[in-house]
Amino acid sequence: MRSITKEFPGVIALADVSLTVERGTVHAICGENGAGKSTLMKVLSGVYPAGDYRGEIVFDGETVEFKDIRDSEAAGIVIIHQELALSPYLSIAENIFLGNEITHRGLIDWDATNKEAAKLLARVGLGDSPDVPVNEIGVGKQQLVEIAKALSKDVKLLILDEPTAALNDDDSEHLLDLIRHLRGQNITCIIISHKLNEIRAIADEVTIIRDGRTIETLDVATGGTSEDRIIRGMVGRELENRYPDRDVEIGDEVLRIEDWNVSHPTDATRTVIHQANLNVRAG
Ligand SMILES: Nc1ncnc2c1ncn2[C@@H]1O[C@H](COP(=O)(O)OP(=O)(O)OP(=O)(O)O)[C@@H](O)[C@H]1O
Ligand SMILES: [Mg+2]
Image (cartoon, rainbow, N blue to C red):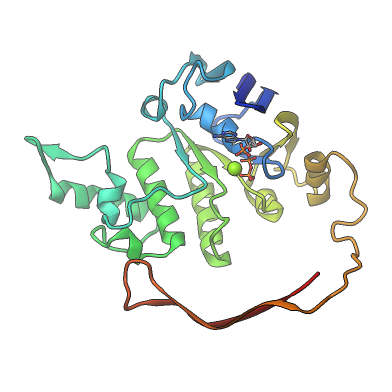
């Protein structure tokens, strides 16, 4: 991506940003909240179409101008957004082929759909049956379904926007292993993450974005890039102490929650929070 500039009314989200990603690598993008990471990836994947930004995108040696997501997907670029976008009531298989249905004489071919879905699920290491509704599996597995969906589109460049933000440690580890495995199959990955330990564990390179500008690209694969070094790029100064001491005056209780129960939004027989208690004090 060369000299990408993207404005929203009153906000310059990206100013002259450049990014170079090599084939078959995992490239992390780092930066504070609002730095422009998601916007850059939306430009790359056609969410913001050509004409909506200035600058140039070169993919696989050719200048590309995507009209929309379908267009970028046809070229092999697939984005998995920060907010997962699966349809909760549809099955895993239906979600994977949503908008890309396998049809036979104008009707959906369910045998082929489930069979192909099962193959894709095996590739991402998910053992669930393709006909399970997506709202019955956890968010870690939903992330794998998103990746299976990307693989069904013959992805060459997979963009993951904070894929592990909502995952527990085990699910995150599985996802990182899967990304390594995809890299082995020459699929290039761009991963946005705030988890610096994760970036150091998986990325070959990291590009740091601050206030809508590219700051630098660091080599992570050789192990010479510390977390503090990445943070210095993100915040633009040396940090003496990542967790500085604070003087806090703790006051009276301002909020108390007692025995709080929450049932599942679509399945009233399931309780998702059991008798939670919480109290918050002023200051
Ligand atoms: N659709 C939009 N309309 C207006 N402003 C936007 C829009 N999307 C993003 N912005 C602004 O552009 C800037 C970059 O936002 P962006 O979402 O790309 O940040 P980010 O680096 O992905 O942050 P985070 O880590 O919180 O996800 C922010 O100032 C944001 O408020
Ligand atoms: Mg974002």
